[in-house]
Length: 421
Image 1 (tube, rainbow, N blue to C red):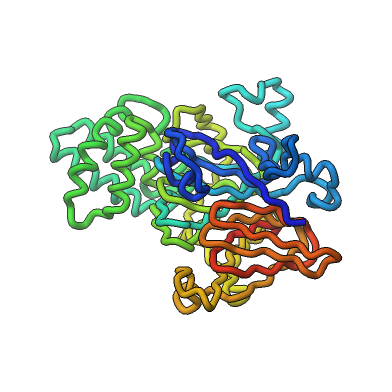
Image 2: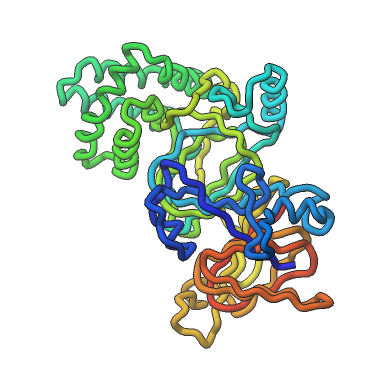
């Protein structure tokens, strides 16, 4: 079956006030709208759109006929989201499967209420995730080399000294020294623990950062993208230790269509832009700054993978004309993007030569699919059934597709499709 689904965007402080409303064709509410959830996660399950006078969620649909609508008789193992990032998210890491299961069991046994501020594990599942940019997206993702982080800290120390912040300059030099000649993973964990210690040295380093960053922005050898990101972080989260932690990470600028894969245990934060994201259906988050929420430094340092990564971006794989996939090799999800174009519609803005579109695309549907149209208008058909199924979805509309025969996409537009890995 082809079932239209919808949801109310989640209003988080870091969201954009207009991006999701513009995509969905609705009026802005005046408050930040951050995430549109499309799946069976109980935190915000998608709703069957205008099906009956009684509201039905996608959970109800699956529970009513789990063999037909679920995956292995249960809920969807993935969650598709549209993100509108208007301000930096918290620095965060997600546990792997073993860590999540053990952490959840321990907190349950300890009787910590699930809504408690100090709770780390809301469920027993891992949470790898993959993000594909719809606009330019900036992010912090994965640890870079200690040399590069040390170089930036020393440059900032020099700038602080030029501004007369002697104590701050010394503190930033001391921070750089923490990344000296020793085991790199231990150095990163030690640096994070130090940043949250809150002693006089940390306070001095954080106090000196705004002026140091402003001075550094004038230098011709400065990484202007990173400096701009630091300035934004300091504006939105003044005095937050996450500003220091951010210097350990790659700063990434994604063009539309570029992707990041965040395996479990990889430290990251999204800073700005609009994107589609798919993840394992979990909400486990351990935070590492840029937040007013609980930061459990000991658990964070235990869970995170402190190894260096060379390139945070994740490549796409071409499956057919107009169809690409991001397949990170986790069982929970993969993400596909289809671009279709009516060859007779020259005004569609998705021409074959420039955008790799095709007049018709077939997508296998051996497992359920959740799709969202991000541009134009797309016709979805499943014809190899007793009764033909057809749905036409415009930008901002979403469909749940039950497992079965392949679907055919036509029209003029772009659609993202999430399914199991």
